[in-house]
Image (tube, rainbow, N blue to C red; front, side):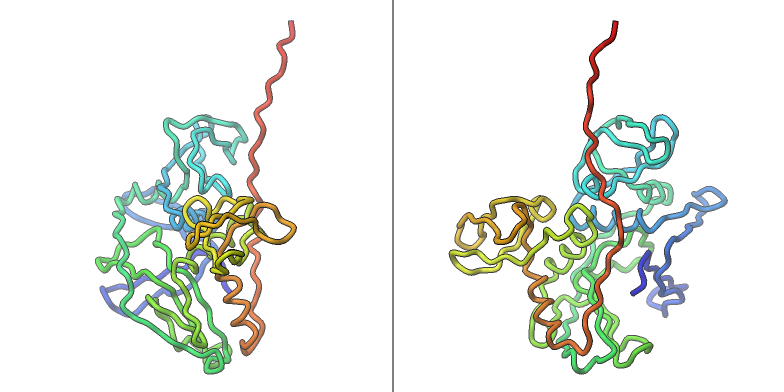
Length: 292
């Protein structure tokens, strides 16, 4: 699969896409931006997606020492904070208020981009893996960081389905309801898992867990969707329980088990993707005795 920033561009409303590709970086030009344009990196876009999916606002934050636009990554991309570590000069600096930094916000502010609330897709699809031996690809929809169309974005699950290797996808749409081999996929679980798989600090901690009392599938929501805990509380019966396995603190999402069952009847083994992002750890604050 391609990785990076996916761009759609049309010369007229509802016209054909003249650009429909994934790029490692995108440079944006506008009369309101510097003449050389402003680059947006893959990392900027990845963490914009994560922070957006977990429901946090972002700000354009500049290092008070060197002026470098600040990007909060991994743990910091989902925990608003005031003290930041600059990736440019390596110094800690305080911001004027608690928040999460992403350079994309500076581009959005400069271009006066307004956020349009996405509308739920009205389309549904039921597919069988055997009918698409070229493979299927599934994404949870997330808001574009630049959207200048007058038409609102669609929200749901985006699907590519291929009849043959190398062909254009026969299905290339966003759906409110997706069923694969008779198994319904929950859009919230798909979207949440996509963000969870991106955060290096959550690696191997997102598991499919059943409540031992009612046997129902547990789904961690809110802060628990990105905060591993030792004790889970079942939303169905209220039972508190620990997840089995060697890891004490975990996050529950039923989707990994669903995808594993679908993989058993897939025409080919699903690909595994590791973005290779490094975890951002909290650096301890040290105090040293005063020497006289």
